[in-house]
Length: 204
Image (tube, rainbow, N blue to C red; front, side):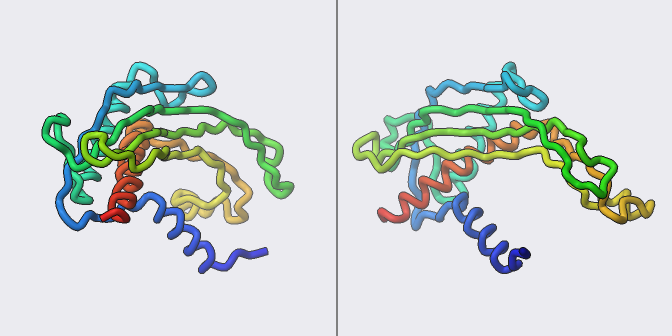
């Protein structure tokens, strides 16, 4: 059964909307309580993540928070003595990597039955938002950003150049960027801001 293209586009827009913030009507300030511990969980896969780089992931996460906050008129302040409009408490932040096996099931392909070991990664955070300097609780949420290695039989640029894989019988997997954990950490920070700006906008 073929899925209508319009349905696919609608689904993509809905999913992307979950990670889009809402610009505030005027400049607001945000104090970020960042005494949280950064954890790297890669017992079952460490192709891309490194426990020794936890501080790099933390820095990328904080960078995403601050840059996205500025984009949506929510400016981070250095301390809560500046009487911020809002306070966010980061309860947790982690980078997680795992691996799993995926087997090709295609009787027309010479790769039929071949298994590929694939990596899955995500950066996750839980957080609490308050109005003012922890005066009124506005909500508690969690969010994440993820990326997986995948196998594909689609023709790549080289296949078109050399006329290979015309029947889509060749399977391969594409590795992720070496610094994918940095990218996901920053994106997770941006997702946090997207969530809280939508909440703040509703209360304005």
